[in-house]
Amino acid sequence: MDSSKFQKSLEFILDNIFDIATVLVAAYVVIRHRIQPFGPNDISQLIAWMIGILGLIAVSGFWDRNRRLRRIEKLSEESRDLVLRRLSGKVLAGDFFISQTRLSDATFSSATTIYLVGITLTRTTRQYMHILGQRLQSGAHIKLVIVDSANDSVMQEMAYRSMGNTSPEYWRTRMRTVEAVVQAIGSSATGNGKMEVGFLPYIPSFGLTMIDPDQPHGSCYVELSIHRSAEPNPTFELKALDDPHWFKFFRNQFDILWKSCRIETVAPTKP
Image 1 (cartoon, rainbow, N blue to C red):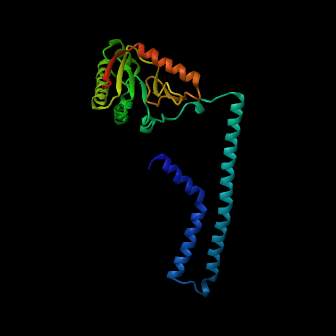
Image 2 (cartoon, helix red, strand yellow):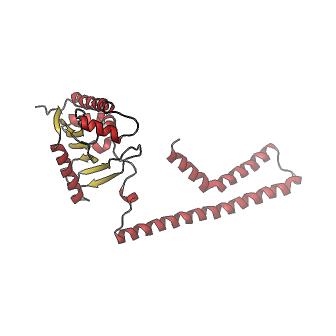
């Protein structure tokens, strides 16, 4: 059971603990009576059980109201703090960065242009291999930017900044695996799409996932690079309609990176 299901189960038990206890006690009394009926001599015991059940019902009402009021109070405080932050112009990092990148196959399902930038794009190319191939068959234009495994200085820097005792040759081998996956995506496409790979002669400061960047509905995920850590990269999302200035800024950043690359066409447009 994952943490979210466990948390929901725990919340349910805490919300209904006295109701559950009431049901269990009442069930015990009924089953006890079916097995061994209460007689005239058991009236005082039966009354005690009934008073106990009534007591649990009363406590359940207090417990439920108290938890509901605490939830309402917490939501009111959060709403107040949010309004105060909006009025003051102060934005917390927790409100800005998203806990995890909200990418899925559905993100790319209708894209006609996809730009991906990363140091290796190992996880991205493997995870979205199928949907990227589908978009190629549908005529999409895909551009990927990764570091150049043929550049010795870049491979050396990769070894310096990564966790553990790695070497340039380790990263070169890993990058060649990524390049093989990219080739497999391109070679499997039979449609009219186009796929290009840019090999960057330096490590980018951030990763990018841009969906239809030149369209009004365009979206962009920016993933900041981190050093010697296995923690998730801080990520934020931009929409062309909501943040036109910064969306254009990162769109231009992609063009700058692309112009720095050695470019290879993996899946050419078919006539």
